Every structure is written in structure tokens, then in C-alpha cells.
Length: 211
Image (tube, rainbow, N blue to C red; front, side, top):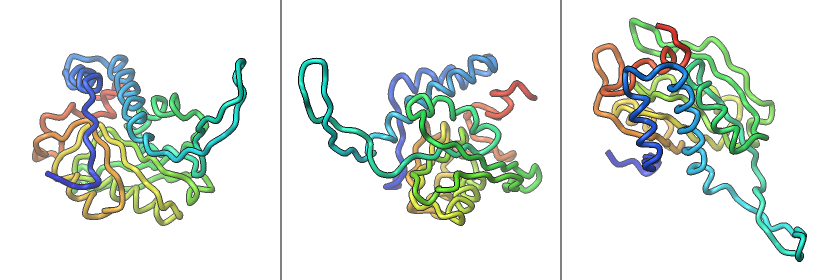
């Protein structure tokens, strides 16, 4: 599957940490920590193209010109609840980013998203939005969340997930072809219950220890 806007961030450290997360015997504490660490590593990659402007600084030895991030600021928007597990890792890279929240749950019968909460930074139209959700399964939650963000004025949106299914990737790309999609792995398929195979189970339950 080859989409211009789809990027697999497959650094060896990410692969290693993701393999531990997939293990059914990995507990919630380790799962949370690994998810945060992977989010930070992926954040390093997706912020690679942030524009810089030249500034003059003075070191203890001499004056020089250096680069600092310019222009558009960042907003990190987790899809509740599993997306919360990726926020701290990204904030460790860009601590001044604003954080919004979108609450969606998956209808157990139709597997479609239902929105119950949305709170975004007031100046969202002036920010590069990083939407985070560990699992891109059917794509429904990400599609709906991006639609809600766009309605509120956002123009520059990136999606970060941990594991994607081909069905969800295709659906998200077709619904929002302008959005860059970053994932740590593209898995095989969805099962009859809408779970990614081989996947890692229900990310929210494994983060928060609820089953």
C-alpha cells in the first residue's frame, strides 16, 4: 500500500519497544511508559520539517547566528481515551504546545465513532495540529476527529498512530488526503470485531488497566 502522505516510522528503537507492547504479558505500567517513549521518538521525526528562522545569539565565547523554530505553533490533540497515552511523550519535545481533547467512543454494534467531547485551543487555525491515537483500525474515529478539527478552522493537521490496519489507512487517506499519516507499523487486517490483527489488543484497556 503506497500513499504519498503515509509514513512508517520504523526506527529500530521503535520496533523494539512496539514488540514489547504487543506482548500480551506486558503490564499497564510498562505499556504506558513504552507508548510515551514511542510517541516521543515519532514526534522527533514528524517535527523534522518545522520551519526555522535565524537568530543572533552570544555564546560564552563569541556571537553567532543560530536557528530557532518559527511561525506556526503546535497543538497536540489526543482522541480520548487512548490518545492520552501519547501526549506526555510529545510534550517532552515541545513543552509549549497547547493541548486539546476530542472524546469519541466506538459503537460496539456498528464500530462507528460517537463524539461526546471536544475542547480545542482558541487559536487552532494558527497552529500545526498533531492528532494522536494509538490505533488506526477502521479509521472512523480519526476521520471524524479531523473533520471536527477542520470545522473549527484548523488547516495544517498531522495524524500519529502506533499501529494501523490497511482498511483504516485507506479510509483516512480517502476522507482527508491532505493529512500526513505517521504510524510505527502497518498490520495485516481487521478481524470481525474491528480489532487490528496482529495488533496489540485494546490500547485504552491496556494503558489504564481496564478490561
